[in-house]
Image (cartoon, rainbow, N blue to C red):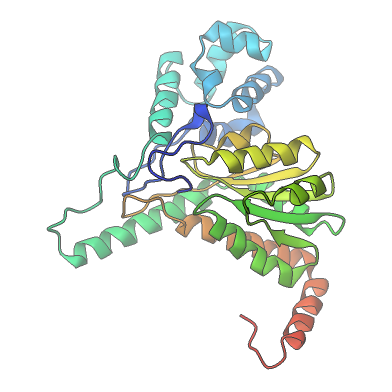
Amino acid sequence: MDGRPGERGEPSAAGGDGGAGQELGTTVAERLRRVQGSLSPAELKIARALMAHYPAAGLESTSGLAGRAGVSPPTVVRFVARLGFEGYRQFQQSLRDEVQARRASPLTLRPVVSESSPTSDLVEAAEEVGRGALHHTFAALPEQEFDRAAELICDPAKRIVSFGGRFSRLLAEYLDLHLRLLRPGTQVHTPAPGGDGGFRVDLGRREVCVVFDFRRYQRDTVELARYAHERGAQIVLFTDPWLSPVAEFADVVLPVRVEAPSPFDSIVAPVAVVETLVAAVHVRLGAAAEERMRAAEEASGDRTME
């Protein structure tokens, strides 16, 4: 979604936006989120080690992953079984499949219908793909992560900065347009050649950065998020099921599905989750948000507030 054909994000996370109705299997990260509340302390160590270097850590040997997590190899085997895999080989094959999915591009993904198909077939396929993406996104949406995102965005002591990549920047702008009506201290960052110095120097512990980064993870988006994190900002990440490199250090990760009837990843599910987050922020801020919305409408004069 974010990079151009042939463009890459971080070296370990090459990829290309593309959907084409491709059926996305349940990722290891999704499996992990489902069972995280029932993991033992030792298994939680493995989970943290895996997610800190996802998916590369899981492609190491059992002893390698065990050493990284500070547990025994048999604990790794039990952990993999807890995720629903028959063995470590199947676990690693799932991760390899994810790596391939990350590398998909509009040139490698197949469209959902052939060029000779009637329009009715395309419309039907688009409806099915879109409905499936929404269903799977909300079914797997991590409730605690979502609540934490809303909490951070509602914190009056924080400034909210949203940014994304070539395409996902649209989502950052869409979110910010809503947030500025609900609370003060929000902005969307639009990169300008040589003009980021002043923006970067202001980043710090007061900022919550809402980052949008999808496969063909953009290097400059990842680097800016990392810089903000290193300066103490908190990071809320919207990404795909295969996880942007930003997930390694993000405070909140909200994965969304990106299936589409075309060879390009869809923003249907990401927009739906953004709108749900806006609804949660509106509810949490309550009367303060209502008062600000009224003031904004009055300040707009005769113009209708969109």
